[in-house]
Image 1: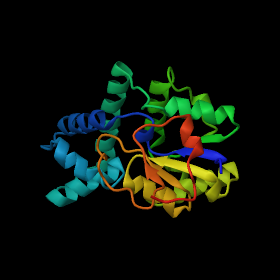
Image 2: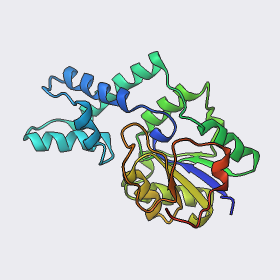
Image 3: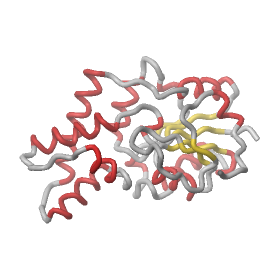
Length: 225
């Protein structure tokens, strides 16, 4: 059965930003006067739980330090913005082809993320030359729900906005934690791991793929891997 809609989830389904993100966190820590430095192996473990602000708060608590997580995260967003604006970002393999094929077949397209609105806009602006915002019928952000992923609220919001039943939608997510949000909303889901999630298990998903493209529209939405 061809899906009625394609829901691309986290920013990582559109573009690979994990290393830019890590370096931006470290730049923010330095600016905030924190003696913190997140190395690649540690950062990869931190990504097991989504949410940049919450990640800062958890790290501070584990170290027995008090920090203004919102302020530090704001600094991180500033450094991330500068990097994206100066260096740009590119779409991941097959993303544009999938969205264009879906549009040609009258299939709705949504970017269903619980990331902050400022970061969402930054990424979409950075991708616009290759992946125009007009390819999406709906773009969400974290301000639209009380709880971010892995809570299913943002997916439930998207289903309501587009008046869709969950079993008619195909979601694509880049980490098991974000995939869990779509699965909890009853949406058939594909894993599309980025650099930091490669090799991890994606329980409950239909399959795990390395690239996207028009053929994704032929996915058997009733078969879980």
